[in-house]
Amino acid sequence: MRVFFIGNVFFSRKMLEVIVSMDEVEMAGIATKSKSSFNADHTDLSDIAVNRDIPYKYVKDINAPHILKWIRSLKPDVIFCFGWSSLIKKDLLELPEKGVIGYHPAKLPHNRGRHPVIWALALGLKETGSTFFRMDEGADTGDIVSQRDVSIAPEDTAQDLYENLMETAQHQVREFVPLLADDAIFWKQQDHTLANNWRKRGRKDGEIDFRMSSNAIYNLVRALTKPYIGAHLMYEGEEVKIWKVELGPSVSENIEPGKVLEAKPDSLLIKTMDGSIRILEHEFSSLPQVNDYIL
Image (tube, rainbow, N blue to C red):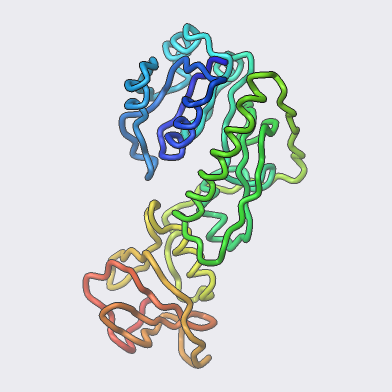
């Protein structure tokens, strides 16, 4: 089975490493990016292409006519698109006989849309999914190729969940690629009546407000920690990144949210709406003092 691969993030690399090693696969080509201002985990896949003598190009617009002509000339049976920030249009979707297979780190049809790893953690979900599907002109709406549940532990950070999803997805690829090569895939249609769509997050979504509950702040910080951009708060007119927190003890209901209860060299304890939160990793240039307010 001739495979053309599209990707430019670390997840793309891990999937490609599995795919190129499979007996059922003959690599037709690779489209990647040399740099990206959009993806925090951008990865250039050209080294894999060079080491294995696979045709490749750096691509800005995967739907551009000259790129379509190039991909068509490589005669792929299937296209895998794992980690690409723009939609694939009809001409490319219809080019390979076996279609274009995409990936979404959620349990489709639930939680389609943007930033699924971040939203799953920020909303405090206990479970998400790892889903490969045949791409169509919608966003995350095509028939499912393979789907696995992925549990989320209370202590999991964005990095932890990302790694768990990659490990799960690697097992799935090893299972469904041989079936795809043999035309033995069972395509499961999504029930669109169950679908919801997560929106693109903005800067305001990453801001800590101590009128939030302690759990909400904890979930927000672990959702946005590395490899993502970090949650933040505003202090003395400056944006301060917060990378790690833990739930603090119960405190008097008579203390207002945002009040600094403890200030140590290695941590800060702040009153929240329903308790307290301890900040363990941060980027304060000058530390707040006890009885200061972070508003």
